[in-house]
Image (cartoon, rainbow, N blue to C red; front, side, top):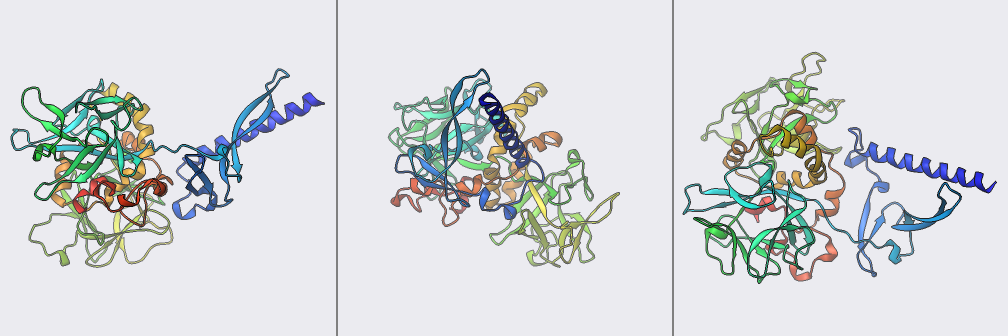
Length: 477
């Protein structure tokens, strides 16, 4: 009887594990709930624990995630102790967790030098993890800025997630394995450069506040300086997606492309450069392959048009007001006639159009999908990278990818960046785009410009440049 009870208990545990796995799989499916559909059961709070670390508190149950010990049958008649995860409310050490962010904003780190023929170069982490300066803007030049608390960041290679940039006490800059640097040597702060310079200054936390700099000429490369020396110590941080997106109907699962149609075949998706015109949500949608802007007229027709620098903004038909929809996604409303960007209800050849009001099936709500740059042109290495660390990394990083949209970037800057960066297409683009989860709600603080876990900030940190986010919005700091 005892053996039968043990087997029954074991089967019940297997059933629970299967249910948990099914729920985890469903959470990543296309039909996962939108932000507005998430209830208290899916929301968690981070609260500092008196035992060190943080409590992860369920909003619904007001209980903490905890490790629980229990005894089970090992299948050979022996009773063994195992640990599992459950909910408790004792505020004990078993409910305390060390929380470390493994995601972060993805950016290019660019430097402009007046003394070099190739004025703008990006920091690269090459195939073997070595730092270099290059004119390329591909996957090897993308860096993840992981929050360490108090405005400090760790700068981690996107392609080599095990490497980060560190500075030793002699001022030498190199990559090093995560967690292998001396305390603070792999941590940096980012502040806007002083007046007269365009960019930011990147300072080492532990190494006498040394500043990351670029050295040109023979034997040049990355180095540090103790005193600010001008342009060589100024960096421009730009979103890794370079403001290039595909637009997909959130509820119809159809993407714009080839223009002017919408399609279920994501390989045919057109790429758009999203240009933020002002902080009120006015945007232009630049069609990359056509070299023109998405415009509309009062008859509900959507077309690609050219724009002159002398065009009157009040009458420009390519201007749209971009707003976030209640149930997720975004809408685009024409500034001239108020029509909403939509697609026709044609099962054979659905086409872009504008409508006066939201339709019942919400064809006017669009998902904005950022495109990340290629790693290299070699098919085998590219496929390997996308199939392993890159695909996983980009899914985790999605909230930070979308942070790039918060930056008001001049139109000419987005166009220049999009020309330089080669975007993923087709299946690669789909692999790079994941569902935006609750990570952003934990990391981004909505009450001010800072980022991180609130309890980790010192009072005198608030409002300082090095606590402002997103990083790619440094122009508006």
